[in-house]
Length: 169
Image (tube, rainbow, N blue to C red; front, side, top):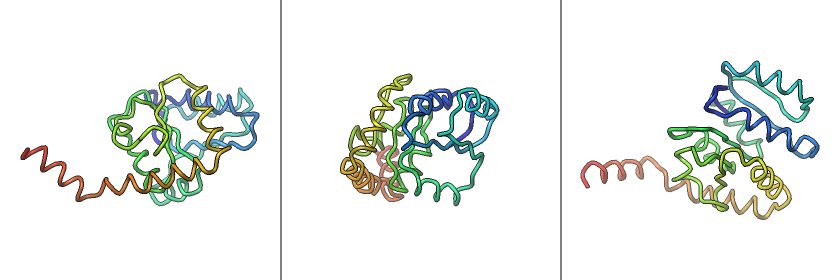
């Protein structure tokens, strides 16, 4: 979910789809637009990927429905100042796997409890985690439950208290 630009590391997401193309349990959805959208379509065609679909830009209301239907969110960004899609997904109870280059992962992701953080380029780890969660409904539901508990700590009141602490000590 997001802009199809270089720093979002779309190639890594596409490589993940390639690595799981023979496991028919998994379908990938790319939501967004940007100058790399034609590259995505061409890559999908060249690699005969029938497990991935590009749906283009969606507004917030549509995103909410997409998050609710999804199994998890993968954020392979090379760099994110924060990574708002992680907040959005987790607010919908959706587990997240993101690169360690997403700043919000430091606050929102507790490894194995509210999601997973991975090193860029480690497609094998991404693949293993996705398969693990698909094969272990108990672990998946454990993460969803922890997400719902954890994000309650990130309310407007929590933000105001944190800002006051930063400003006033």
